[in-house]
Image (cartoon, rainbow, N blue to C red; front, side):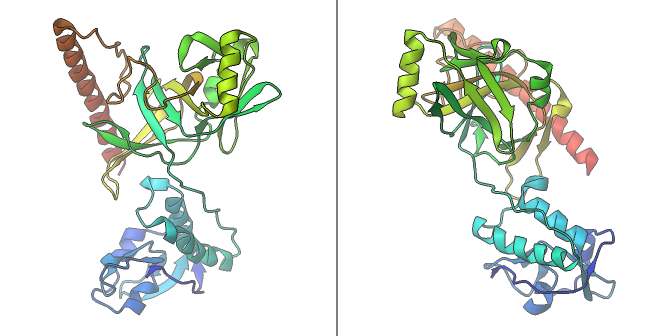
Length: 343
């Protein structure tokens, strides 16, 4: 079945409790009964049980009779389609049909429905640099105009592919405005070639790096220096040999990020609401930023660079990895506890 076709009913703007209304539905009824209350049906589920449906948005009385559509339930459902509350696991191909169903009820109530956002998965990679900053590399494209490099170092309000490593995996979303405080403070952000601090391509302090948050992401304009290495870098970008960007950031306070662990697909989700930006960088290999970076690591305050590969250093690196894992687990446990307290 998938998305359930549009129907027109009365619409009520009273407070709406989706789980409570779903609980009042009669058990073991016909598919036509349940289709009146929901906007999506699992094509592989049992059509004669409510467990096979999602996106309830109709009021159900104490007798199990289905009534008016809820404008709040429809708006909430569109929010979930757009990634809110951990998003949804319905097929991408069904999202527009569900949106049309919910949007039709809102229009019947003379309300303009929220637009359906693109929730394409962002090809994003995670690492930790030598300073202990989180690094994200995004599959974006750079262009060269008037001698300046332009591109997006970060994109907003879309879920990433799986990040993390063997001991913990998650999806991440960078909220629009996440860097606004950092930019407003005038944080001195650099543009680096390949994240190497020896090769500075631009800097906000002297206006050779421009950063602007728009609806899509962190728009980056780099005015590279007239040096041989920079001309070589620009040549590689012009040819398309290097066409991806990444950014380095840190989280300064617990409320700057939000973790959700109880998700439909069992994969934790992290929303970055506020971040301190350190640098942006065109990169060749977005998954491995520097030789000392481990893609198995997530940023932990005070993380140290890895030791040289000898026996003592290997033990120290292993101990350090375990320490970082323990520190991360404490952070995750705290986030999990805070999340459960809010439920």
